Image (cartoon, rainbow, N blue to C red; front, side, top):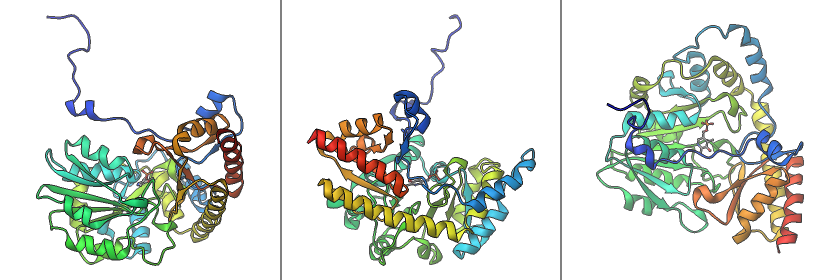
Length: 372
Ligand SMILES: *Cc1c(COP(=O)(O)O)cnc(C)c1O
């Protein structure tokens, strides 16, 4: 018998292999740490125009009802999404952010020993989900200029491959998989591979040869298309995302999800936001214009970047990247350092308003002039 203590209370062994997600630093933390009042956050790909005004209105109108449990089946929101995207109600599953969909897919479909193919560098939540369930992660490096190569992906497929993630446009590179490649890939895979097509940024894409994956779901392929209200719809703080897939695939996920996973303010806010075409268009055109202004400034500074189809740009700052990132931070400009993706010479800069972009560019100019 030993005395009281927690030394014999052991977590699952797998946890020793897992590192916690490292989010973009919040504004308040940088304010406190550096004694700043003015902070510009360009680190988490949030909507710089704020939430949709229609969403705010809907959320405010609902506030007096929050003593009630939310709709466990998210019927109204699913109906709006289904209609907007051209699917039936049972082909839509709403989740507590796109992140929860990744976790739920992992919990529903992965066993110890399964292999999950993850083209890299990419969004870290895919590895998190696989690790959580004890599945093996098979990284397939992107090619030059962070281009997808589907033959590399085919070569990684084995009998144990259970899932394949395609993030397009990819976070953090902004590169995308062409429609031709996506169709060739999905149609060429063995039938035991579930493809998770992460379209978190698909509404920002302007390329003609892009495909958002929905056509493949319609044709009956085992593809889950992930979408989120956190990016173009401006609702990151309220946590809502969704998946579109075959009804049978989603039905199995419903077996593992918590009944009240999506809160009611998120449900009513998202249902209003998805109807707000004006806000979507304003966000899209701000993004295109400011991204172009950022490209111009980066060219003037001689800083190489990866052309992006998304609302962020991956910039190569060379060996000084960490120092430049730190100096930007101390001056109240938060971007994302690439270390988490093993991109030690890079930062990812979210597209802000033109005012925010001007602050970033001015700070970069001054810092790069000193470091050069
Ligand atoms: C932001 C993001 C998501 C989803 O984020 P949520 O806030 O959980 O909805 C999914 N995939 C990628 C690549 C993202 O960048």
